[in-house]
Length: 415
Image (cartoon, rainbow, N blue to C red):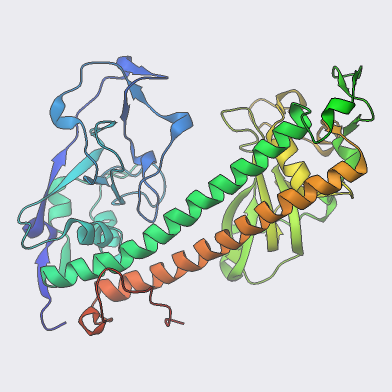
């Protein structure tokens, strides 16, 4: 810490206001996307919102088109915890610098590293100062002048770059793992569609089509309802209040409406289950059900259905099948959409012979198993990165004592 100096963010950078893009030019498609605080992750980082993107078809000032690597900060708290969150722009020429966001401009490249500043914005001390100086009651706001007054301690440029390199290595590993998870899930979905939507399963040429209540299906197939092929543990759901969750902080995820709320130190399920949101955000904008495939110890609340496949119908089969279904006809309620157990059990599935389902399970199991391994790796990487970040940014870890450079292996001895 001897070489670290105390200063204000305004000594290192300045914040440029965004442009007030007109709502009349917003569209469902286009060439440029207007960014909002919703494009930030709470912990920091860029969040793609492909299905809810605000495309813009009006006149665009060239100075407000962002480039890859630009650093932006959320100056309006659109959702709890987003105020002061920062993100790096992933591509050039696509995203527009909106008025709710600040563009971070480094004053002297010899004094501050942009990636280090990115992590600095996402550190607890900086975020607390930004929130503490914000104005507003329902929706809190900050301003460039208030951000400039935030007090920080920074090391030399070389050490800044080393710290940013270590943390970036974790983010890259997380991003690569997430990309592999998406590929594996895409492969599993493609296999399901090929076999159970298009009926192009191995040997399909030898199965002529016959009539069914849902149209023609291969000979020997059946249309079954979800209630026939799945166990439902609806009556075992256990709600926890926010206060109870705070008292039971631990390592097991607590699910509500197919979303992780908190982690608790107790659990009531252990194994592989499929969670389907009962109410709240029941369906996605693509009219697909909100699902979570869980393979760990967990505690669900009373806003989820808990399903497990009855052999030979695997839980993976349920997950992929429900992902293809438009469940709108099975939802009741306008203000609070809900799918009851009775309605859920009526959802139809195309089901083939038992040996074909067993082969499908074998092929998909390896994809899902690898995906779960990668998900655990992402969880561990995030936890280690989140432990490292405050220690590196406070000088508790001496990066000068570490060997090598940007290719240093991840630090793991933190527990």
